[in-house]
Image 1 (cartoon, helix red, strand yellow):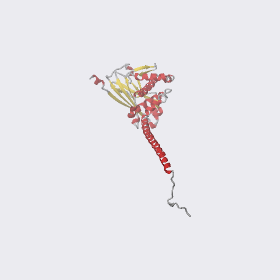
Image 2: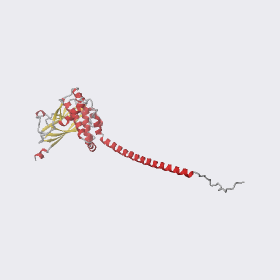
Image 3: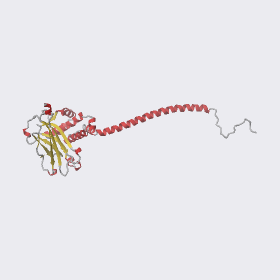
Length: 313
């Protein structure tokens, strides 16, 4: 019975329509407060970031009253709506303890966001949808661990990040030298950790059978690129390869087909070579028989006289 109660969730969906985006004259815009259970939430929109638009979760007006560890657990989902093609809507979701003050979720390059061809901003209006699945009985959450003294990162990502930074020290240096905020650094390494974890845990078949997996990886990679680590040339080929897995399978099918065709032709050539060798043997035998038969043979014309052995007078 206790387990059943622990599985009970409250799902709240909140839609925020932001009008006159380019007329906004503020560093941050706050949505109205909405509630999941008895807990207040709101969405923060940063329209004037460094070449990017940032959409974040906020624990609402009463966030300062939250204890560091509260026995509530939520699944959070935030979507920036593509107003023409729902499949292109940018979505991110994660599980977080309520005690976190800011939960950065979506970051997009301002050019991509404002490009009319992308349909995120239509008639100077964008639409943001937030969903909260709240389990009031759950007491577990994802554990945060100190990472190199520069950020608090989910434990699942720390080992991968440590290995990456050991081999590529510029990952840390590139963010520290820009004097970025603690929140920005945590967002950057969390995004990178998610990409590394995705590539480590997913299989080829996951990318072939699930369009959502491809979209998830693309969204994660977009966020990593916005952070602007100095050098990701070691990682980018693996990401691009995973995203092109369906293209790879088409090419693999073509290569397999052509390989079969080549093998078939090689077999035919070998068969023809054997036939040629046998024909050469037959030819040599025929030449020998011909030489024997030709010896002493005098060719006659059909109109030649038969001859009678009497000399002409």
